[in-house]
Image 1: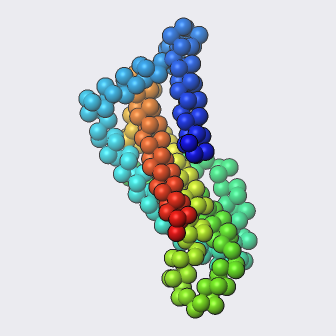
Image 2: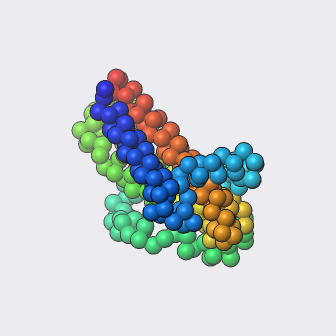
Image 3: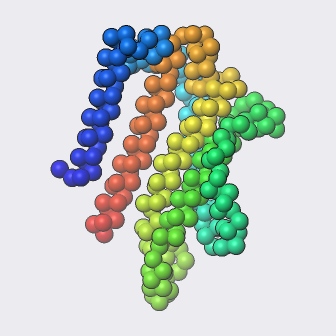
Length: 253
């Protein structure tokens, strides 16, 4: 058994143990079931909500918004990181801003975005992009900084063109850090969009959670929350699997 597989099994066992503990505490009355439902009831509520089609419209709205925000964040963040790496003076100005960026919750700008772009998908896309882009920029800078200078000198000595150098040297060296930023960006995009829907939007899964909360409908609220959580875990797992496959292929090459 490889070390990565062993770590994965330990994580799964730890998560399963925590879920079982929460289930037991709720069933024994240690935790008030009116505050937190047992995980089994959350799962049942989620299945019921998804099967009934109550979340279909919200799923389309939320996941399409997250996908657009995420793609824009990856493209713009990678381009911005590459530009900053080539411009040291500009980077010296921007670095402190990037370091402190996440000390301010970006969803506080949602009312301003609504005032500028009106209610709809656009403010949520911008909010998700604002949340995710800095993570991609930071990871791009770290990845490009990690390329050994000797390899770049070798590329120049072999007279490789810019695109060949990027494809055969820069990307393979920077890819692990880039993927770390991509995974973080997905989490930040999801948080930004869901938070925006929860606060002011009238559609989406965030709004469904907010509406259920204000209606004291614990079943609907925890069912929608669990659904969002499982989708986020699945998406992150897909990126992690893709990253592992690329790393193994790179190692064989």
